[in-house]
Length: 210
Image (cartoon, rainbow, N blue to C red; front, side):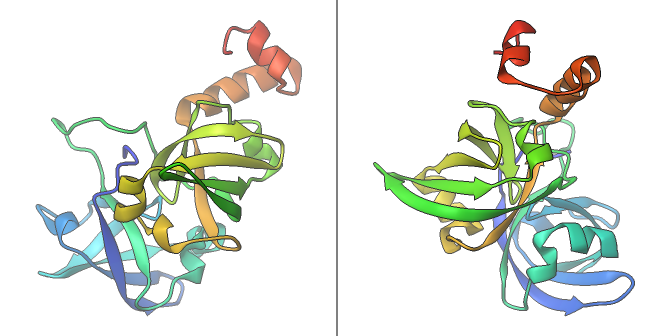
């Protein structure tokens, strides 16, 4: 389990495609107290540490994980968001993030709004129903708040600190990002969908969720 608060930006050192897709990532903070078998979020995808040294760690990824996420676009020298899994006693910031990417979205537009940047991101219809204004969403592993959403896209606002400390500062229109909807939102979605077959704003309001 993660919180969506990125610890550092890692650098892809090595990519070994195959049945077990291997990634070696250069890092610093993430290596503190690292152990074999630890879970680390790489751009929002939870992967298991299988090897490490003083300057990097290696993870294996199943083919289906690569296919479902933006990990398939990674290149040597590329940057990724890193977060170690929660441990007892850690601060709880952001929101509960499982590290199970639900799908990918495409950045449609970016525009300045005061000192922040607004990102409009496309979203698959089945995920759009799990988003709500002021709700949480993980974008490339970053815990963010939905400003507005439709059946095909949603908007988030990125403050300067987040831009400076995540890979979003190097992404723009046309780039793809990993998406994970809020865990609580998933359960609400399944509950309401089971009750009525579809989720609408009226149903959410009538059920007391808005």
